[in-house]
Amino acid sequence: MLSKKRLAQQPPHSALDLPMMLKTFEQLDYPVKEYHILEFQRRLHKSKYPPLSQFDWSSFPVRFVEIMMANFVTTTSKVVLSQTSSDQMTTKLLIELHDGHQVESVIMRHETGRTTLCVSSQVGCKMGCTFCATGTMGIIGNLTAGEILEQVS
Ligand code: SF4
Image (cartoon, rainbow, N blue to C red; front, side, top):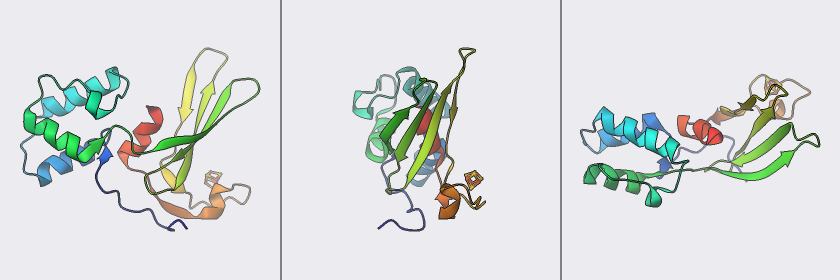
């Protein structure tokens, strides 16, 4: 049975979670350079989010790589269901987070050629709209910055 509150995430954290990266380097007393953080994020996005074991670590300091490999992974959540509408314009993704709670993202393809993505930032919702299944759950917790960005990746 799932907890009514989100469980605090233990390592490994999402490599897309910039605040957690900064916190981890600080806790380990490693004087990380902003340049390395920005270059890591840029390379991760450009290379389309490979596992960190296959990431191009060339030119990064050894200690930086050790900390990242020991404390982070590229994704902490996974898509468990994908449903596309009959007109192919909308795809709903059911995503399971590290603690077993699930959220939804929706990809919307517009006739203009634009594609937009509706992401979740919380598990549950406190608004309580009676027509909405999420509203009946109440608020369970927030997603981390990494969990929100993983929906985009
Ligand atoms: S309860 Fe549902 S419809 Fe109402 S604000 Fe929350 S998510 Fe939206």
